[in-house]
Image (cartoon, rainbow, N blue to C red):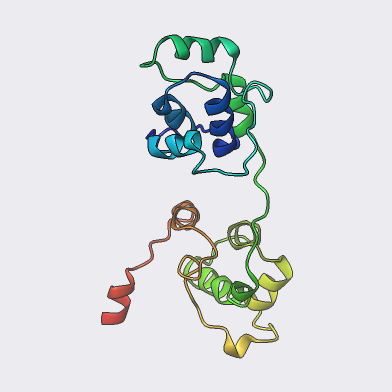
Length: 187
């Protein structure tokens, strides 16, 4: 299985199309789509991806006929996505992420944690990191939030509102070092 970060837009649908329309090996398709060879074999056998319509990587410019032909002639060759599709995918604008209803009440706790541990963080960075509004941040900063008495400072990563790498990126930008949870409990 490939560790390639550049995958087709819809890997499973692309794999279905490649299995149905080419003579590429399972390994070649698996490496391109970031899947396991057995999963590709399952697609070929009809056990996996039932009901998924194949999507042609030729139509959306991710592969060329020449690239597929080259790899069909040499089973050891690896398929490479066309450069134009890779750049198109990298430059794609990130959309707002959905926060489940059960997690929304945790946002004020995460905002409080960020304001407490990283006082130099901007409202825009908090909005981008956990997906809240500037007015909510302002009311928590001014301690005028309607539920301020019940807000506890809690790590946004532990609440599932952002990833550790996203948080680390913000904290390193502001040169903030957060002590380990175990160190906090011992003091």
